[in-house]
Image (cartoon, rainbow, N blue to C red):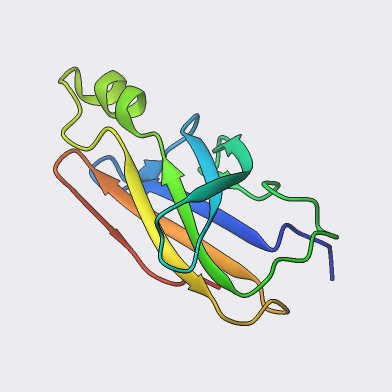
Length: 119
């Protein structure tokens, strides 16, 4: 088994049926009431739409609230030629088990997005 970041993400452009590459991504730790945040990592999606190296594989995260921010504006504007309706997509999730891997997929189109807990 290869080592990987404890949190990874994947963005698919569901309107085009292709991976969404070059989207900047940030991972924040939130306070328990989500009133404050601290940046843990940043990266960008690769040609396959994945960001698998956000954190060092040896990094151990604590249980708590986290937020993955996808800076989708430039990508959407470049692919549609229109101003982005969703320039940012923020997904807040609870990391309950620090020993598990958390994968945050994003299915993106110009006027909608969806997410789920990936594997």
